[in-house]
Image (tube, rainbow, N blue to C red; front, side, top):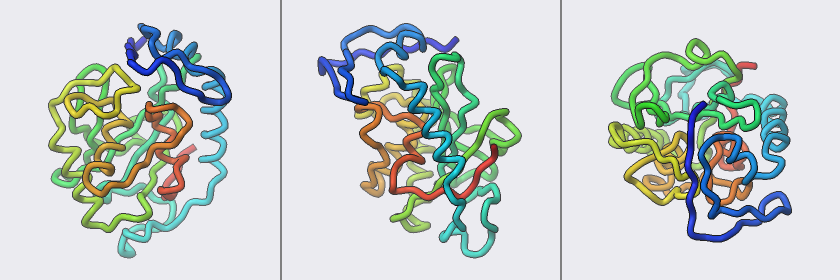
Length: 215
């Protein structure tokens, strides 16, 4: 089981009509589940939404990709549910397509921090896979976001999921969020997980479109 530690100075957040004590120390995913009431139900709802959403043609693929096909385009966001290490908390996983290396994503993982990872996700992960593209950015901006993420390679994993402001360490969806926030000023976070950024929120936001899905 992957361990995590959330420590925050803000005493509580309102989420799903419940108060969350963000001062509580978190040592594993079961503890994290206790901070976010009903999160498992919400995650299943988000998965159902992603599975029922229409798959759109990537408008920035320049005709090179058909609707619903896996994309290697710079800056495309990848999401999977197969990274969960506990049945009580589906932490999911997210990454961003790299720009300087072919067939790679940039990802933050608990074991090795921010690294390049080779191979397409349908081959690497056994769960469900989604890819989304950012609506408002240009191809050049997406590439810039990807290159920014590549510059973070080598940094450690961020175990404080409510601290999205740090740039010295990253968890997976924070890295993707920061890449677009810092380069294109596009905020892909939603209100659903307080200041933490859940991988599924990268689809839940109305600022992305679904371009690939593997159930």
